Image (cartoon, rainbow, N blue to C red; front, side):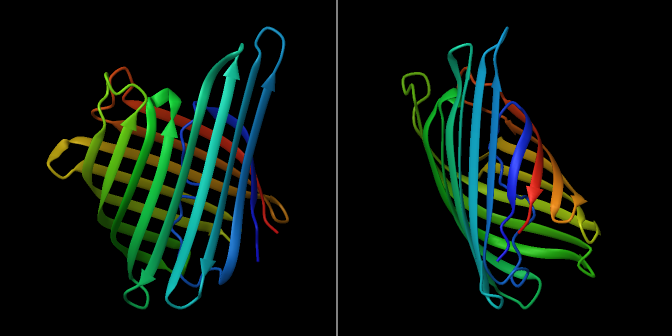
Length: 250
């Protein structure tokens, strides 16, 4: 079993993203594996800030027909005594082989709350198919995902933002390449429009670079940008995150 631990060094505006954007593949790491991520920022003096974040993912790969994983995250922060971050996130996914190499079926569910996006509870569940469209001797891999999900959203102030029940299409493209045996680059694009109103959509872009420093210690750099074309009232259309992390595998 191999367990990477990620310690975040720099964070600019907190946005939940998965611990790794590279899609899980059957047979890559048979058995159980885990990823834990944590960050802590404290400043005192002219500015008093406290910021905490923790994430954990557990994966099981049977090496033949399926891989499944679950992840949970939480973040909390204060600046000069005022709360500025308070949110939680959980995601679980089951991936089953349809063909030997290229086609996978996916089932997933997700929970989220975010005080500062006015989200009291957001629950979604969905299904879809994932297609491997590129595989060059395992050095470069490309995936295309197509599916649908249902989301239920309740807001902290329902008089301003009434509860929602939506069905959205789920489409994504993911590309990753191993530059050498310990350095990788990955990119993921998601587009999630409502089935009855394509102009109401969520788009996200995420870039990840992981570079070996010494032995099993890596430096990970991540950028994520998400845009909601029709966000809740008084909420901005976009979120941006930049993270630099150490990754230790053992």
